[in-house]
Image (cartoon, rainbow over all chains, first blue to last red; front, side, top):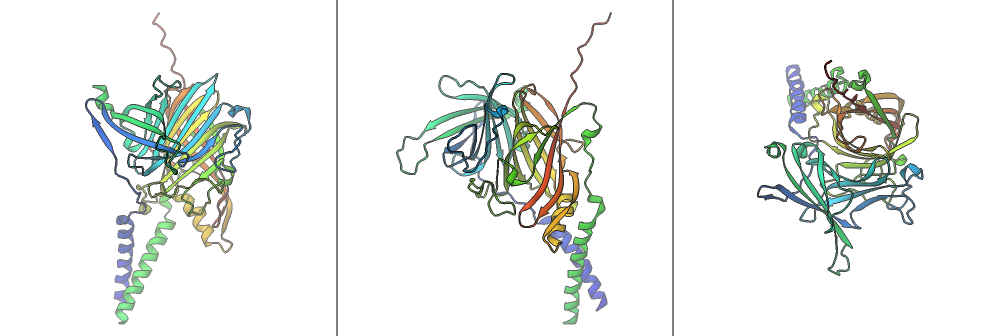
Length: 191
Length: 233
């Protein structure tokens, strides 16, 4: 019986080690990536933010109705020209795939900036620096300044565009911010 | 029958002994010294409180130990984001003056390996320092020591809390020296590509509320400017 007990201990050690090795401690949920391959222009992918339902935070001074309710934006004059926003972002099938931050600032020393960080938990993050001035057609364009994991080996462009809702449906959003990425591998870009 | 009971008891003892070995394994202790502490370059230090109610906003799936703040903030309940926390906070300089707005995304990582003492969070900071510029910080954080020395002792405590003085570096990559990668976006940081390290100083943790007195510190190394080449006389 003692030998059985010892064998049980060994089995227990092996079983615990195997369970920890093979059973994933974290399993991120994924949505299907909806990527379009463009001839000689890399891969494009569209994300969007439904306004107002996907807006998590608007951080800006002197707001009459802060979002979320209870947000106390710092009154320090240092942040007087800064606007920080947080959103959920959706893919082409309208499924939430990540979260994003947008910081816009208007500062004499550091210049005008508009930046996005798109964080897709299962894929990585993309840091996008936009041109401060929008183009004539209402689009704002920018570059992928840095990426992590899936986005790390990529370079490319991102556009931001506001699309007002015209459906007239009762529960429709007022509009959406469309973000379209056009990325290509760094190696291809350098050729 | 007694052999079966003996086998099951042995397996239980073996599993518990293995988990105890993992828990007390000194080989998985984290380095408490920041790799940037030996750097000759200038370092920007940004401090923040890691307590949710001290942030501008903190949100997660709404089911975790740490409750979203403010209470009416939109929660990240969708399957693709439910393992992600998002925080916006004011970052303070070394003189405790407001210096930046920081937004941190933290997602539980599939590279977590409890067997190796790795409880990994993939995180990204989006930081704007008014008058100076913006930064993006990519890092892999290992919370194993934090879990082992703070969270588990809090659960084992009869008062369901932990008090003490714990400090440690949580950044564990992706840099070769266990540092974070930092990229500049605008202003004086435009085109910056450097290293960073985030550390925590914990003094109190509650099983019910999560961190009660925990401060974070993000250090970013500023590479020394390359001197202009002088012509050979």
